[in-house]
Length: 137
Image 1 (cartoon, rainbow, N blue to C red):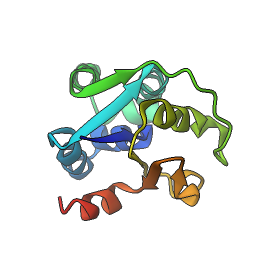
Image 2 (tube, rainbow, N blue to C red; image 1 turned 90 degrees about the vertical axis):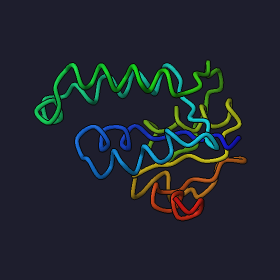
Image 3 (cartoon, rainbow, N blue to C red; image 1 turned 120 degrees about the vertical axis):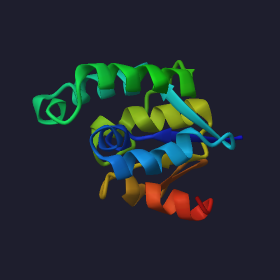
Image 4 (spheres, one colour; image 1 turned 60 degrees about the horizontal axis):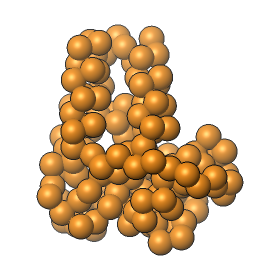
């Protein structure tokens, strides 16, 4: 099973954009992939998606349904590592999750910072398009 951590920005895009949702679903619904989450990721997602600039695109009920689905479709980890490696310290929690879960990929829409790292330990850092191309999805 291939373990993947999905950056918060991908979930937000999926909630407000049908094409992004379809593309992300290719990963979430594929039995070859194990989507990894933790409390920090779910907490950040909950805070970000309820910001006024995003709430106008989706209802509170849709957001709650999405968060519930994500909880059901993902493997939840307790992250214990403290990592200080990202050019943007706000992204270090994602690298800690990758480390503690031994994830194969961190998929991000972050055009700088995380993608510039290319790899963190055993985790390859790629865009969603790169990942979909790699697995021919």
